[in-house]
Picture 1 (cartoon, protein in one colour):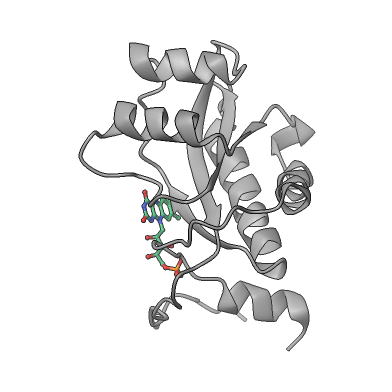
Picture 2: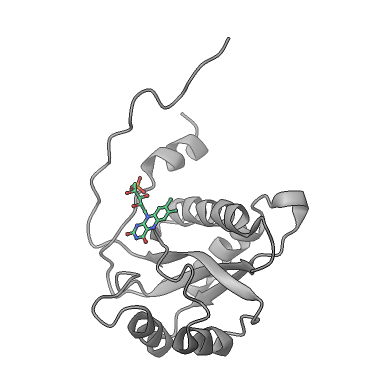
Length: 168
Ligand SMILES: Cc1cc2nc3c(=O)[nH]c(=O)nc-3n(C[C@H](O)[C@H](O)[C@H](O)COP(=O)(O)O)c2cc1C
């Protein structure tokens, strides 16, 4: 099996991170990988907000849910955002996120897809924080990547059978 196929199988959602920061150059590689994802009609209207500032991460966590951290205390979070009025916003962000997860895995960085910001970007406290991140008002978040070093390996969820239907 080649390295890409191995990465596809080995990537796991990690929900427990060490406090160790992710080096800037790795975050740059991961975000750059996102920009190479496919987009409908090559729109490339997605924007990726890379957040590592602990105070901002804490405020975002509080604004979304004061009870628990939706990104599991990861030291880095990449928001995948897109124009609210673009019909390809969700699939384009999803393609970019999966591309970034695989890039992260290839660099030894663990990740988890987190969706708690979806549909909540125009709540005042959340929008204020997104504006601080320079996200334009006509953009919303359609998914995010929690990134960091895993505390422990995650269990491998079994793959369902009968997912692939063949027609020959
Ligand atoms: C659209 C989408 C949204 C997800 N949202 C969350 C989330 O908010 N929080 C979370 O812990 N995992 C989230 N996940 C991760 C899934 O729970 C995870 O991919 C699944 O359990 C399979 O585990 P694996 O990624 O290790 O194969 C999301 C995955 C997808 C595709």
